[in-house]
Image 1 (spheres, chains in turn green, purple):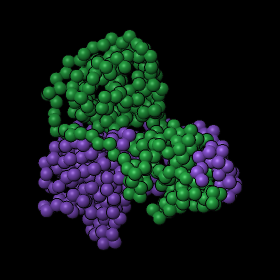
Image 2: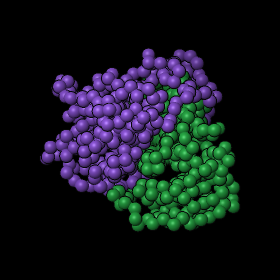
Image 3: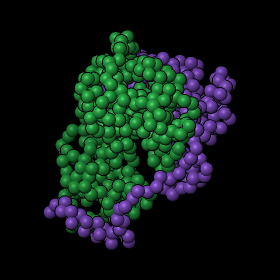
Image 4: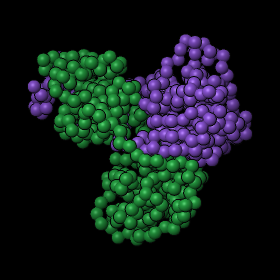
Length: 317
Length: 265
């Protein structure tokens, strides 16, 4: 019982990045445990997925034929069956939106400890997980008791595995028809299309919680007018209904890669950063010198946006 | 019908703070209703308000006596009554794990027998993001995580939800009741409590329970996770920070924008 089982994730025909990152995390943990890394891929074109996942870090790949797309009952049942068969020390799952929809159920059914949203894992006579609390304000280490556990990993924290491997490929017998169908996926919809495509803009001025009131958005609109920038925002602004969904940058919104991204009053939560870290130049204006946005910024002003933005508008008028 | 909403009082941390052992020094914390739960309460109250039949909305929390002030805000916004679970054995945990939370709420569900349970996607403090789905599995309810649209009328056997996947894609799913739905921010516009609501909330019940009231013992909540360290993440910043007043820093920033050639005429 020293192996690691990682369950890959795919959607609408494509493996998601976290699948390759999980292989790296799983390999590290398997080495620390002195065991093998097993990777499972459930539903969809499992054989093609298995070929892509067959990187040097992987010892064995298990394919589970079961429908086309994620549904939590199938994933939970298949993962539990694989766990029973392989009896791994560690079960690693993505802390994605779909991970949130089945990992807690799997851990509960297996009666195992569950540590979610790990940004690092280490094993030395016991598992230690590093995770954030209070919206990334602090990092914590958590010791997990026992010799079997379930851990979900945050995307973007491990490098993606690559290269061609020689893992064994095994089709796992699983009766998908016996799974509960009390939650039925009807389809998917792309949201956030609209008049403006912020992912096409060269210069984005992006506004966050720091704007405080809806009326204050006019100040940022004035800045956009003065500079020719396109207006975007972090999640709270869209949640409040102050801007439409097509303006939202982040994990659940748009991924953007402008030449310049000017983040105003945005703290830089990991979900936001996931959507804009590919910008060529990142500039931040924030009152909090410890805001994580400064970790990825190239230029910064620690100051009140209500002082700095009017001065900046004047520069271009 | 009955809707159970799990709620949590969480602390927001000031920009400057100090860590005292395994927690943030209380002087830098401001307690409030967990943001996600605020949306879950609103979703529950909207179902009740739109219903022809009688819908009872019950808030359930794991929290100390101090949290009653916050829980009363959920009552002021329209929940009918609340159940508050606390115990010395819970207070003793460095990090209350998912199994412990699911075990407590399992007993609350057994007692209340709700048709629908709404939770927040996660709590802003521990960010475990797992209680709702673990609870559903425990009590044999269906579930959906990260719901940002809910089409449900009281008495229906099926809820149609949208799950907010990454990258601007939503999954549309039918979920049979009874069910647990974890609610994402932005699903609705949480109301402010009215003065009348706040007054009425003073008369509403917040029933305290300890573990033995729920037929549980201290071992149930003595979880497998133990917090061993808390620290401020090291800043990885290599940003050029412009110093000075608003005018000076704005001038420097304007020069950068001109250099990059992105400012249109």
